[in-house]
Amino acid sequence: MDATLQYLLGLLDLEPIERDIFRGDSHRSVVPRVFGGQVAAQALVAACRTVPEDRLAHSLHSYFLRPGDPGAPIVYTVDRIRDGRSFSTRRVVAVQHGQPIFHLSASLQTVEDGLEHQEPMPEVPDPETLPTADELLPRYADRFVDPAVVELLLDARRAIDLRYVNEPPFATAGVRREPRSQVWFRVNGKLDGEHDNPVSHLCLATYVSDMTLLDSVLLAHGRGGWTVGDIVGASLDHAMWFHRPFRADEWLLYDTDSPTAQGGRGLARGRIFTRDGRLAVSVIQEGLMRVPR
Image (cartoon, rainbow, N blue to C red; front, side, top):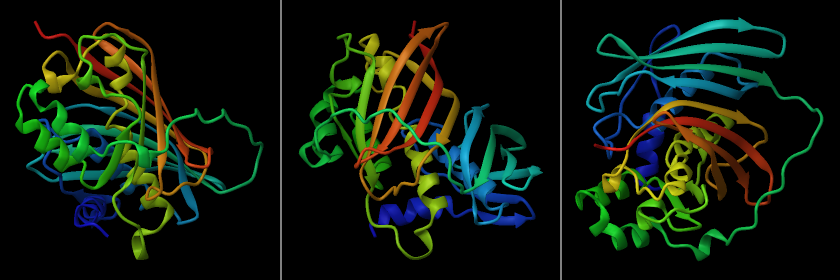
């Protein structure tokens, strides 16, 4: 297993402090705040720690309340809202410096059979034919507001092998494109032993789900994002539905689009497919999208 993946798994292995209270560390971010995918994944870990192992998260709804401090630990408190025969509901609040920075509600369910249908997976090139982050990002270093951002982005993604199907927003800033972005991703290594469990795969996908989701909003307006200095952005809320089993250490296609942007905010929708075409996860997020003045 790659050392950076071991580090990421360590971030998601929260320290129990008291009953239903956990503490997590933070990773250095490319912006001066905690990465949203990290706090969402850690909050989901905390929720999952309070239910029987046969109950898995099928949905989460969350709000980013304040920027997190990447230099300080985060405390997660879990409220056991309800435990029924098939479903459990949990509310998680992430706290730093005495203030809530993130709020998550999660519903968890015992696995059962039911009706089945899904949208088809879009046709895209195989991930092996696409450039890695190490090959792609240095090509556009001169477009970033600070060349050091390249190294920070690479560092942030060493645990994740993420490959753009089409050119990312920072590569075509100034050109309006279809509001749709597609990436293949998987963690950089094979999960085994104690890490090879359904909760780990769910939480790792939650971590990655916040990385490129708002790209589709940027593409519609020819904006390159905060990396080129033409947008001030941040995640406002984040919702996910987990439909079918998947592995985060096998290739997953993240297909996203944006139906609207208005009021300094943009809405993005995502679908995560397994390589064999099963719809595994649906995602929706609204993000802050302010044009600098």
